[in-house]
Amino acid sequence: MPRPPSATPADLLGLLASGEPVRASHLLQELGISRPVLGRLVREAGNQVLRVGRARATAYVARAGTDAGSAWPLWRMRPDATLEELGTLHLLRGGRFLFESTGERPNLTRPVDEVPGHFPGLPWFMDDLRPQGFLGRSLAHRNGPGLGVPTDLNRWQLRDTLLAITRTGGTAIGDLLLGGHAVERALAELDAPPDTVEASGRHARYSEWADAALAGEEIGSSPGGEQPKFTSTVHTPGGRYAALVKFAVDDSGQAAARWAELLACEQLALSCLREAGLPAAEAELVEADRHLCLEVRRFDRTPDRIGRLGFVSLLALDAAFAGTGGHDWGLAGERLATAGVIDPDTAARMALLHWFGRFIGNSDMHAGNLGFHLVDAGPLALAPAYDMLPMSLAPSRTGAVRPAAPLGLHPPDRAGQSRHVALAAETAIRFWEQVAGSPRIHSEMRQVAIRNREVVARFARTFAV
Image (tube, rainbow, N blue to C red; front, side, top):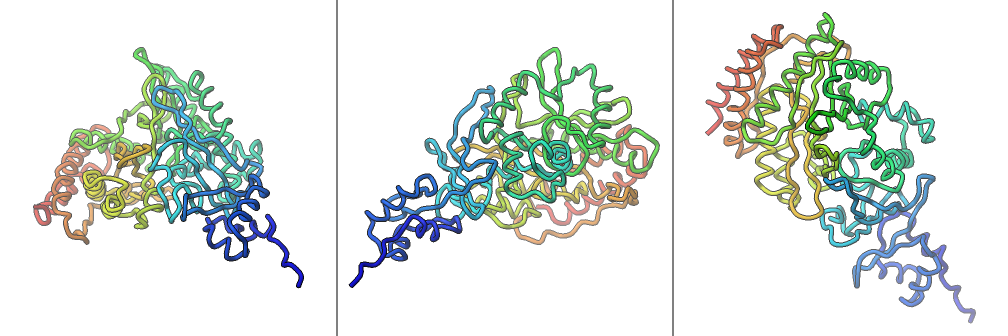
């Protein structure tokens, strides 16, 4: 009787085509081979196959490659601007990834499914590096031809995203750098940032950069978000700091005037949160030649050295570990605390911020507008609040200015919210009082602020403890 043909590396790769980890026991059964033969097939497959897990949990995955590469070292730029190697990120078949860590980094290998370090897409802790929003579109338009990717960000595939992250650093949010090109660029920008400006020269340079940003030119790195913005590295007599700058055109148009008032409101909202003991970004209004600018200091950069601090958005965390959609920050916080990603105190602060946003009419509290400091181990701490302003009063996408109507608040739809309502309302009342008395608020928003103060106070009397 003829001997059955032996399994080949091609047979092994066929069973690993999806990129999902396949247990060794399943491979033995499907191929009809012994463990020594499986070991030989893996060796013959070379770097096309990776082993993951240990003992009875041992599994195998198949690697993939693109012109962006197939494996990259992952680095962290520390707060003092030195570098730490975290491990290697491998691209797998099916658009999956495997992160092999150097040392114990339980947060970075926390399993999304069953296998530590294996991810069904770009790892959650790197998702915020994907170019997105206003400056992401600008990056695609400007750098697309040089990278060999579409100039339309909406047409990007995984390969295009990987090219952008590994060649340019992507958004450069947080402290992670993927591959040697990204490290080289980050080190070069430490000494000569492309967005450097003297504090005394901001009034002229910020208007130039605002015009360039609207014309599609990339100024500095590219954080996400839809509002027009650019980054800056500001030199002062006491050192330098990194900032994100939003702007409104200084003209007599209704839409421009409303956006200018909203920038003033954002500065007041962040200040009120800090006064209440909540983490919030520091912000300063800068009168540029042709624009009113809101300069928000970056909390993922350190002063002077411009080293980096880790960051991950609620959008990335929620998608990986909670699945709420992130529209209710309090609910997302409860789920993340149950999963052990954050602690209960952080979840409570998330709920408080969510109620504060509701009380100031922030209709744009999506999961990308809240974040955490990324660390290797332990619960993640809440990053300072940002993008907190009354977006319900913003002009429409067509430029139409909506009437400044008072808030319409709805009762809590979950139990246990009374304490958060009370604390948030207290801070929101101070916010509306400051808006009503601000010399930068000239329109009907002043009267609406007075009415909103009473709306929030009445709501708190009704529902708070």
